[in-house]
Length: 631
Image (cartoon, rainbow, N blue to C red; front, side, top):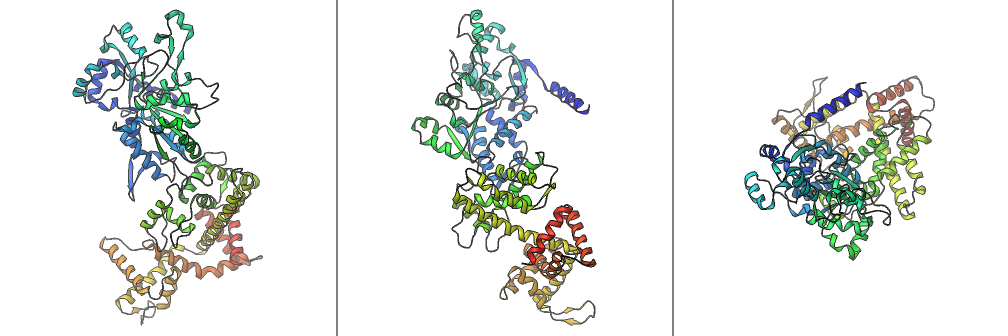
């Protein structure tokens, strides 16, 4: 019964938010809270900003999209800064249709759905409160009651601009119900709801021959004509089209460019002038943000059609490409699985990562920049450090192909293949190899994958497999290291003692015998060679380490194992190299002896406790790494 109590509580909270009063009382409220009278575009922009934003590496990250949109920070920033922000400031951008263009399953619909859900919630907050003339089917802005000749004076007093004219229905109601006294007109607070058709409309194209324009603009109620005597009487008209109901909020056009021309023409005056034609009435004012989404092929066909030229200049296109960051793609798959009925299935660590590597590789274009192969490019895009390249190289790579990410494998294909792997494998656990195998097997079943693309995709499967091989070996080697962090710290401290002695040209004291010795060049080189530090570059690298230690000391911080990325990598590789033979013998033995069996059990336990495996996937990983080391 707890859920019913929560429903009751939510109902009571909404009742507390309700407000009703006269237009005169509404004006008093406006004096205190001017934001109540904001436009639909402004409302969307402030709703997004209400979740906060942060600046990271010159890019603004809007947290409103954090839980559903991954790896599209640049596209989102462009969407907010090039459309929502200037539109909120009443610049001419607001008179444009927002068209999200991108490949299937790229996030376009998700973005629009988020905006609609966000507006619903925002209208229940004090900052996002929306008020309308009570009883109006279009939830009309009460300020339309102010006569045109007084609007300039109203602006001087309130600082609020009024746009739009009073609708035919409310014009009649003002005279008949309120005797022309605008101060007595009742105003109420409304709450956006797509389900209740308040402030949010959605239009989907269907058969042009059967789809009626009334779906957009409303229709005559013939049953009332006898009562009201004329089709031009607004009381004989149903203001229930999507454009009517979306007033004050968002109007979504799904696959807009597939619409018949007669539907698109209504958008010309709606976007430019803020009104549309319905029935035998004067133009009806509407304040709504129009957002549509389509794919690139549909858009190119639309642009090439001369008949559509009038709409071209009324559209702002924001490309929404596929995500190109492996770590973010992994989050997409994880979210899709958690929201499905597969959440109980054990997905071994890195299984989703290899799928993400494959997906991102299919979307990247090979760079012409010397020394950058597609794997290095993938790592740079994901924020990894790649030796010899920096942030400037990353920016150059992004400029090389402005349309990168507009094609490739979509997330739905990957999730479908993961689902297939789960069904095919009888145990409730799948690993990276299961996923790669299923991705490969699915190529023949995917109608859009050409033979040329298939050849390239098979190569990407091989690359993803090689990446996984390295990940798997490191994972097992780490698990074999007893008290790994302690071992790494000891090795690093030893290295730093020797580096300090080398750079300062003094000897070090043996901790056991107390004897003074020269710095251990063999030890230092055995670590530095792990990350390709040449003999000629060793002094510069060691001096850089000392400078870093001094910088930490000045800040009152302690230099530790995680403080220098390249040194940390070198320490890891050195430990792994020393352990390789132990790992190889233990994992590949068909009949392990008692000590080997004990070691395997310890490693399995560590893989389960510390790395997220279960007993099945941990043993599969050990067998696989054993086979790799024996090749």
